[in-house]
Amino acid sequence: MSISLIGKSISVSATLKLNEMAAILREKGEPVIHLGGGEPKTKAPVEALIAAAGMINSGEVRYTPADGIPALKKAIIRYTEEFYDRKVEPENVIASSGAKQSLMVALQAILNPQEEVLFPAPYWVSYTEMAKMIGAVPVPVYAEDGSFYPRMKDIEQRVTSYTKCIIINSPNNPTGAMYSADFIGEIVEFCEKKGIWLIMDDIYHRLIFDGKKPINCYKFAKDLSENSKLVVINGVSKQYAMTGFRIGWAVANKRLIEVMTNIQAHQTSGPSAITQIAAAAAINGVQSGVESLRQTLENNRNILIDRLNAFNGVKSYKPDGTFYTFADFSYYMKDSTKLSKFLLDKVRVLTVPGIEFGMDGFLRISTCGTVKDITEGIDRIKWALDPDAPNEIYIGERKLVRDWL
Image (cartoon, rainbow, N blue to C red):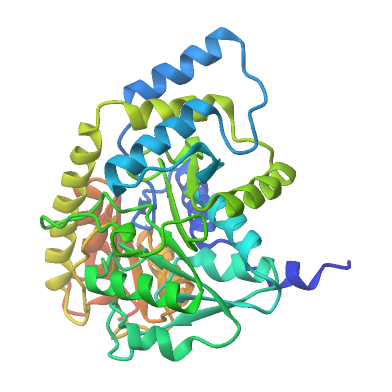
């Protein structure tokens, strides 16, 4: 069978594949604990559900404009003014079927084949594959000091004449690291000076801990005209627990949005009318659910870090936000894919291998689940790896005896 070179180069989405595996095992009655998930377990805002139900009941569910319905664009404009102190017009906004699509069409509009897109490592798994799908070159940037917090110097050293775009995801998936205001200011200034597109992937910007406040990239921009190369990506999936609704957006200069709209029109046409109405209702509705989710995630993070810190051989790093912790398990196994499969096979705990995010020996562990999921999941992992742990454990109704240490 003849497959395109680009098609052959694209890897399966590790996170989606793991979700599928967990679902299959649960259907078989296996007591799986999913610590690899990237979606909150809280319910979507009631306003969103009522709005979606209302449209369904009306029977008037039709095609939508390629760049989003006016009601949603109006809500995004309001959101941008509230959280970014930035007034934009409808022509500066595109709504997509998820923030992932907004990001993808932005890259398609910006990058030519063989041009480079830079992003700090560890990085979200899709950045590399998105670049490959348009023939561009993904360039991960690792912090020279080995931390999860790059310096401007680290970025500058990887910039070449082929660099067309930089993506900044803060707080970061998978590490939960939130980059400093100084760093964001430096990267905005650098990109303006060099004429490089800067995409701010802000999908987690309200899910931050320890009293930290979202950092507004526009605050540091000198050029806020229609020549600006600053693009902000966001969506309802994370902060409103609306992952299945698939609504995200981008805010950028009008010419880029026009090109993105043309691309999206040929890809998928406009996003679903039902989910756009729901997203607008969530953005315009009571926001207490976002704070409740944030508090829950912060509490879950504290519990997870305490458990990991009591785990000999594991190096944990306290996240500033998101619902992930990126922990170093290389003391036990340097091959993170092999380790993740081992834990799923032996103790039915699902994690995501660090190699998928550009760093082997690590596991991404999610705090989206319940406290019981976190505590029991880490207890199972500790039993599977730590020779000082008791030799027997009950998983569900089965007693397991460890025979591999």
